[in-house]
Image (cartoon, rainbow, N blue to C red):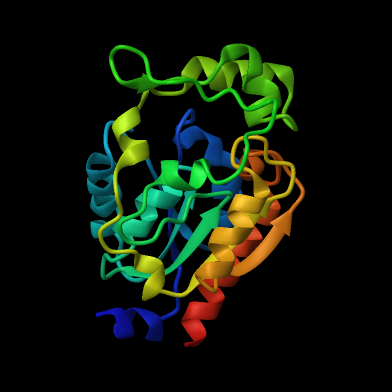
Length: 237
C-alpha cells in the first residue's frame, strides 16, 4: 500500500495542530494549498492523550481518497510520528515540531535545551492540564503576530493534558517515510537548536524559515511551499 501511495500524484494534505492552539491556525496554509489544487483536511486534536490525538488523525487519514502528506506543528509532530504509519501517508512534514524516536517523549526533547526567557509553558495543574502563561503567550508563542491575534489564540485554544507530553512513541513513522522539516528560527517555545538536532538525526530535509513558534500562521505561504515540495517529491518516487 505504501508503494502504491508513492506511485501516485499526491494531492491530499492532512494538517495536525499542536498544544495551546487549534486547527483554525492553519487557515492561511489551507488557503495557499487549496489554491494549488490540493485537498486539505485539518484535524482537531482533543489534546487529551497521544493515543486520542493519533486516533483523531487516523480518522482523517481514513477519509482520504489516496496518498497524503501528513504535517504536524509542535506537539503535532509527536502525533504524526505515531499516526504516520497509516497506509495513506506518503510523506511527513514537521513544522517547528517534536520528532521523537521510539521510546522517547516530546518532554524529553523539550528538556534538552534551556527554555527561552519568553517561554511560558507552565507546570501541570491539579487536573493534569498544562497551560501557557497568559502574560508570556504573545512573546513566547506567536511574537510575529498582532496583539489582537495573540489574544484570540489564547482565548480559543484547548486544554492540553500533561500525559501527552510524557507518552512514549512506539513506532516512529519517520524511520520509514520521506520526511521534511521546518525550523522556525525565532521560536521561543521549542528552541530552534532542538529542532535542528532532531531533524539532523532523522535525515529530515530541512527548511529554515524566519518566524515564531506560530510560523505556520505568520508565514503560511512559505510553510505551504514546503508541504507542496514534499508532495511533489514523494509523487516522483
